[in-house]
Image (cartoon, rainbow, N blue to C red; front, side):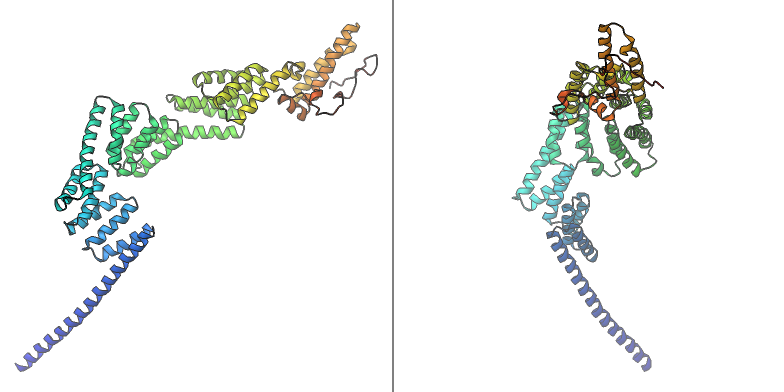
Length: 495
């Protein structure tokens, strides 16, 4: 029996010693943990003051994890979230701080401010009233409570104006509403709808964009934005926003259907531009006509495609078609200076210089800053002036886009026709002489790339006035002088 007592006593002594040891160890752990938490809070405070918000947030996370019952750590972390613009994350921390300390008025005031900006007026009102109950003279709470009442009144009036289709009045009222509750997606969506009703698509987009972040999984807003951008002719932006919708749900049928349409049109338009850069104008025209079939209803795409077809026809020197298509496109889009520029270039190829000058003048009036239009107008004016003097293309009867072989062929035919030896009387010979010299000069100029370039720029390379003060008469630009003897004996090789 005595042995049993000693045994029990020994066990109790051991247990007492173990408890003392464990207690000492626990006190040490708690002390170390408390020191670590204080260190995290101090580092968070310093980093926050230095503007290093992400690093500060990391320390506050550690502080909250280390002491989840400390209302101040939640409050401080909420302050960092707000500094980062993450009000949605700040709200739960403020609520937790209030749960832990219901009389923590600073957290209530801060939460009320967030709720007001979110448009949650009833909950915001409760927080501001709680602050005033505790501190009736709190000016901020009084002012914010007044804003709550103003917000409710203005929003009700805005809805009433919207219901009676007075969209301008609704927009005016919502300006203050959005100012008071900038984080409320509902009021931005309402004002966006009003802007759509009055035809201001740009402002409708501006109001709708923030709602994609103010609502979770806001596929409807992404799709609506995509369709608005599409209607405005901004197919790249449209594609970008519909992709955001599919990131949220790749099986969304409405988004996927719209995506296919935008993607197809975008590829056609981008491919056409690439072909134009490569000067493959016929292929570009084919792509542009396909784009018109892909989207026959949105007028802006038809206008754009027609403009680029006009450009391609002008650049590929399909003169008659270019003038026809550019004229039709200009009737649809009279404020587009590029249509006038491309038609002017086609008129120049068709030797209708007065019309070219008129088109370039109009283009310059629409865009007075464009150097391209200024240079084009100067060139057209020079060509018009030149056409009233000596026109080498007209002398040979060839188009301005004639190649070298066509120039030589025309020259040979006319040289045979107007050879002075073909005529008997002196008057006829003199007339033939003059024509023959002009024909030979035209051939020489138009087969020389440098001189032809000057002609196309509106200059006459054989005009003595353009010889920059050389003081010499222009020499014949060919190997013979028809006035070298009284008899004209020219030998031609027409092979």
